[in-house]
Amino acid sequence: MRITLKGKDPESRPNGSPTIYKTDQGSWLVQGWVVEDRSVLDEMDIPEGETVVEIPDRMLRYFSGEGE
Image (cartoon, rainbow, N blue to C red; front, side, top):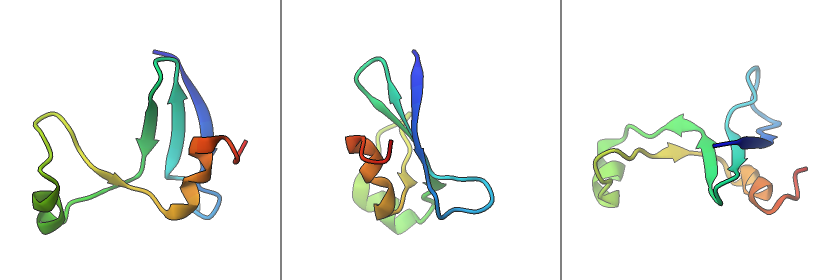
């Protein structure tokens, strides 16, 4: 899999996380804050082998390419 950096959160200091990447397989990789709130996770019915990360609304622009 090859990945292309699409955007780092410009308001996150000092590390620029969350981060969005596009893959060459027609998918996205999202680095964000780990969701550990058990009540939220229970509502989502997360399958084995999957996890949930949270990103702020301001990161959505990177999915469309606007942030490039």
